[in-house]
Image (tube, rainbow, N blue to C red; front, side, top):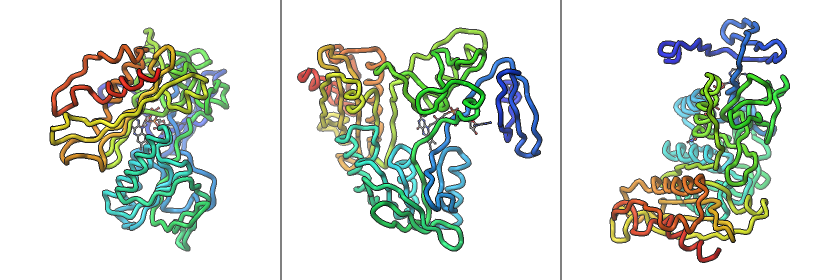
Amino acid sequence: VFRRKQGIDVRTRHEVTELDLEQRRVRVRDLEGAKEWWEAFDLLHIATGAAPFVPAVAGADAAGIYTVSTLQSGIRVRRAMDERKPRRAVVVGGGHVGLEMAEAFLMRELDVALVEMMPQVMNTLDPDMGALVSDEVRREGIELYLDERLEAFEVGDDGHVRALVTNRRTLPADIVVLGLGVRPNSDLVAQAGVPLGIRGAIRVNERMETGIEGVWAAGDCVESFHMVSRQPTYVALGTVANKQGRVAGINIGGGYATFPGVLGTSITKFCSLGVAQTGLRTSEIEALGLEYATAQIEGSTAAHYYPDAAKITVKVLAEKGSGRLLGGQIVAGGASRVDSGSDAYLAAKRIDILATALQAGMRVDEMLNLDLAYAPPFSPVWDPVLIAVRQVIKSL
Ligand SMILES: Cc1cc2nc3c(=O)[nH]c(=O)nc-3n(C[C@H](O)[C@H](O)[C@H](O)COP(=O)(O)OP(=O)(O)OC[C@H]3O[C@@H](n4cnc5c(N)ncnc54)[C@H](O)[C@@H]3O)c2cc1C
């Protein structure tokens, strides 16, 4: 489509191996033909993304251990499922990717174990909210090992993973998926002298310009500005990458656009549970030295008498004194589901109310009268988000 409709000279299976900012050129390797040459540029846009983290433990390069970062890597896992017919999967890491892969293995009727070194899964949530997710992971039949660190893999004579060793036990494994987060692909540009920021991500200004004139960057390889903490942060999310890419493209094309920053808004689905968050969590607020109040409420996603209601837990965090909203977290659906048939995880989409209020810099008292839609199948008269807001106002 890019080639045909947009006239872009797309070169797949070509890798940039070196950057020469003095002579404005990149070294390109044709991965099929094994040819290499220098390609000149006037303007350069870097969108190299991020790579999944693989710890340097014994056996990590054995067959049967996967990361999922590209379509191809997903296809490799599926092929292994079809060809080797594994019976037991171990997932390492309880973040978005780990939980989504654990769910996928459950759907393929494997026995699943999940190992996480923190005391909860989804450790971007506050511990009380993360505990709700951990409960659901166990309820769905996953063996959950929290506070356990991956130390090594045992490898069979055939070179295939046989077991995973943590600091506490050995877990047999026919297939392993690592969901241990990502690192920005910035080595190449760093070697060429492009300045980096937090966690080795490329530093950019609000027009997505790097510190080098005519060199732009966007997506998982760049640092972002957090709109609540007003500090640099690193998020690797498709929604952010797309918006940043649009801004960079407008500027490269001679227009003027800016990217205001991120809130870290994210959502994930684990079985019938929706998990979402935006803004700062408690530990981040404390690190900034802000005085804050929190409220956590349990509500329902529909009027209490309506059959398809799901349980929803909403937590909001606000600054004491100013009343400024600082963040919110939602866990919805799951075992607590009152009845079947509702898309319980869609309840967590209410996070977008909080994200919009955060981006607008609203105080919680201003949110109280938000004109949100109400009809019995969709919400109680007071939306759970507003019930949480009412509660937090009392503690400010
Ligand atoms: C399993 C999974 C699920 C996800 N789910 C969500 C989700 O639900 N919501 C969400 O918002 N985000 C999600 N994400 C994150 C999202 O996919 C990324 O944030 C997004 O793809 C980043 O886009 P990008 O263009 O910056 O990088 P990428 O999409 O990673 O593209 C970078 C490209 O650069 C190429 N490249 C790298 N180095 C070189 C080089 N030297 N030469 C040539 N090419 C190079 C890579 O091969 C790659 O194709 C998910 C990610 C994963 C892995």
